[in-house]
Length: 512
Ligand code: BG6
Image (cartoon, rainbow, N blue to C red; front, side, top):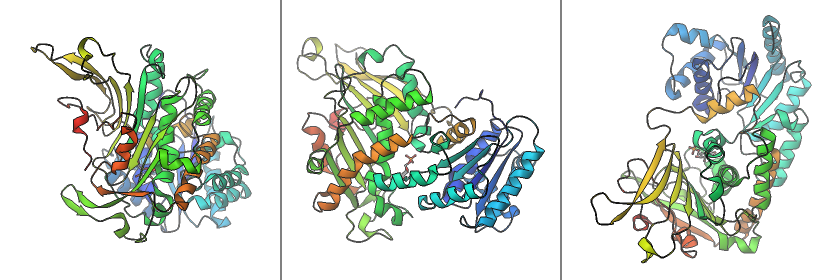
């Protein structure tokens, strides 16, 4: 997010303004943008929902949300009133044409009052269930809300379908009212500071590009582990599973950022083109091969932070015979000249040891000469930490001070959020949508190709009821996920965080 892009006046309509996403993410993000002076003087936010009856209650809900979840809070009542006067509310369901007419009246009035450039800019945020995207899009069109002299844009959230066919259908419905350039598909991982930093690291340093290929890189690991369980989302999650909840979107997005070729220009279209090419080169597995390259597993009971936690099948709302995976590990290959033969290991799961998002680039080993005659030197690593730390570490071998050639791993490091909290992903993404920058949003082609890659895996699992592994809550996943790497002589690197006195050893790998 840069702050020097010009922002004209705009109306933002939030469908689902009384829901969880608006409360936890959208309102706090809007307030932070306001405080950082990234919103114009003239803007309005219109919330749509059924459970709030008047604008006063809406203002209170926004206030509570910023108070509980905001990174930046209001300093005093006066500042808060200056912010909240931009907020309006329409009590309506999403399929009631009268609600759209009320919205239109509010928007028309404001646009008339605003003088100057940018009049007529409209952003529609669909923080609602995806099966309503089609209904809302057609109402927006029929009500005339999408006819404007300014720009119009729509923001949608995942899940975009549950397979390629359903995603395509959803896309076609939205496209009746918006063009591809007007559709902003959020993958909130693309709003994270360190995910955005991958392209800067790669393309603003002369150091990495010459070695960013199969000749120097031994393997790449991408981990997104969580400690939470299914929480209140049983209905959605038991249908989706980790493959469709995390791999189809966030994990493949991180993989694309690491693998893409340098774009012809630093422009949205050029960057999307390169990311799409990665998905085209991603080796597809047919159903028979899935068992060899993918591990799926489900959490069992265990202890997290000294508290006992139930097994997935005992969670509220989950079928006691559920075969849904809460963990996925996979070995992927990008079959192009740059990455030929390099395994990309990905793993993600709930109820794991720690909440960590990390990319580890493991470089090739030293030849077995000099200090490595016994083959006991650790490989160099480039560790990109996305959560909880936002940092980059280059792990090298160095002589331990005062020792007689005792070699220890040391890390050169840079940390983004160790001193202060970085902007939340939603701040960055909402701002980009307002200024019309689609770079960190997902192009339809990315969605389509990701589903085409994921669908056979899901189909294989639906048919093969016995390939589900289990892992104890609070661990790094099932043994099968470790075996997946061991067969190549690799192992998962544990989280490598700041102030690790000594960096990492394979021996530290915890499997229980
Ligand atoms: C969401 C998934 O997209 O990402 C959740 O639906 C998951 O299941 C979440 O918990 C993880 O996001 P983050 O930013 O906390 O790593």
